[in-house]
Length: 193
Length: 261
Image (cartoon, rainbow over all chains, first blue to last red; front, side):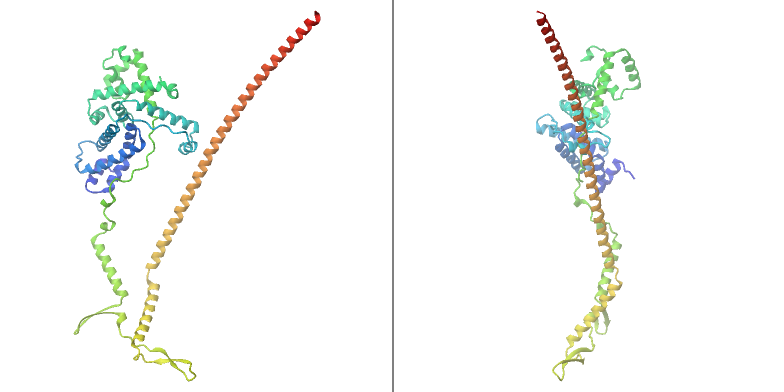
């Protein structure tokens, strides 16, 4: 039987640790992806992810279900990301790409994917990552929440605490900057309109 | 910004809402009609759609699952889940088995309460002891145990122990269960080792396959490069040949002209 988030939360509050573990398994990847795309550092994103669940666990008795559990988790994670950015006093940076390791590539490739396709895929991913790192935090967060987590404009507005129109403006400005930046890069230039 | 060239109301927000399919049906209809006539907005929508396609290529590094942040100590011990009646039954069983092994004897008579184990009962078996023979050698004969009571007790204890051990070995299922568990563990260990070996072999095969692919790709590229070089050299040779032929013709002409003079 598959429990809903809310049912698992209720069981966790009653002391069932396995239910909370189930919530962690269910949400760790989205939260990690959110943290990574916001702050751009793998290890720190993992720490933020772990800290998010620890804080959620401690605050669980106070969770009254006024928001979805996922929204609540996203809010905790975003606050931690903001703290990280303030603490580091720098814009998020993307880890420098490492030299291409053929053996590593071979291990990561899909069975039907050639080495060339894999290199191209990873290159493209890095190009997008670098372009995203150029955006101001507000625009990047809006794009990440919309593009990778499928939140509605209203959900994003509630989560980051700004008007609906501001969310749309941030998205428009962010996407426009990305369009310009991606058009400059030879790896994505050919595909840009 | 292109919105200076297009006066559509709330243009930027409308484009974003259109892109993410969050326009009201009426707004969508109106904007679709606008797109038919406005190339600026049409191009921008197409460009931003391409950006969205590119964004989908951004993959964060893989995450190995986090360990549960819930402290292990907050989990109840396994025996807390066993019902109380089962715990009491298990305790009684242990007591019964212990009493049986100890051959416990509980008596209550006019002398009061007496608790003894089977091993402390008086034993009166005949003992086999040695006495000197006529030739100074030792002969075996029966002798009363009265003179050495501790020997009789010891012998009786030994016999009883042997009997009990034989009986317990013949009937007790515990050693078999232990054996079954240990053989089960050995089986599990053997299977795990088998799986690990199989996994290693599979990884080695995949690695070999990938390396072979790389080598093949490099070889293909090398052959293509060699062909190109060969082709280019051929062209150079042809050009050179033509040049040499022209030179010879020129020399011939000069020679003939000089001959005529």
